[in-house]
Length: 303
Image 1 (tube, rainbow, N blue to C red):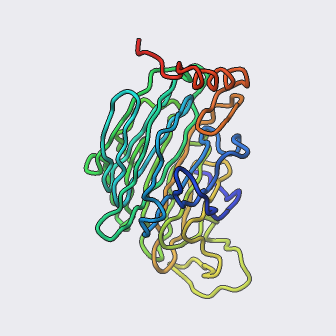
Image 2: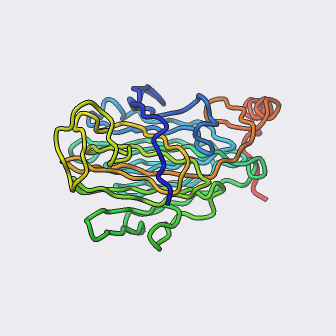
Image 3: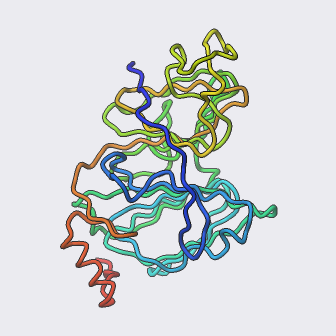
């Protein structure tokens, strides 16, 4: 097995989206090749309803897939095809926009006012840009969770991991989307497809994804399981970690443990022409999409 070194770490940045939703953006709208096949990742965790209640009113998508993972609260959704539904805590929606869809997403907090979740955008290859739109709504109870002997918990949303497969299927980029919890002071190695781009997003606790046997930093303050770890170098909440090549990711959890999303996918390696929620391959295709919006021909009749 070859250890994947950390290529970069960055903090998610406060961003305003929709009708006034305060969220944190880990990446998006810049250098799409760095995260290919993924385009954007938003963290919309918020405990103040006034910061998210206006939601994301009707807007278009074409040429991409949007993946919404809800931790707390609910998201009501509706679209131009007549679909309606509610994503509750623990559930996932994988929406393939394909040839085009108009939809809205309206968040609603739990009893404590908490609305916690994430949205990932994945690109579609040119051969599937104009495919028919579809949804995969997955309840939390249908997402398999594996628990290793050391207490590490992994929810498998899509892809194959530890002999289990997630319930989301038929995705162009063959992605792996995991929700990983590693207990305090535990070092864990997780297999990742060698040919995929991969990143982790930390949203609880802290740890380090750098080789735990060769820590970075100027002074070691604690020692865990024989591995030195500099407490001040721990990667914490709302941090994006992008990995270099290799076939496994290693994490050393800090004294409070660590929880993160581990996401990987095989790059599409095609040109990207991008305007907001519409992502095509060429500027001509992008202009056509905008013209379709103006002409009322954006939504294609199902074949």
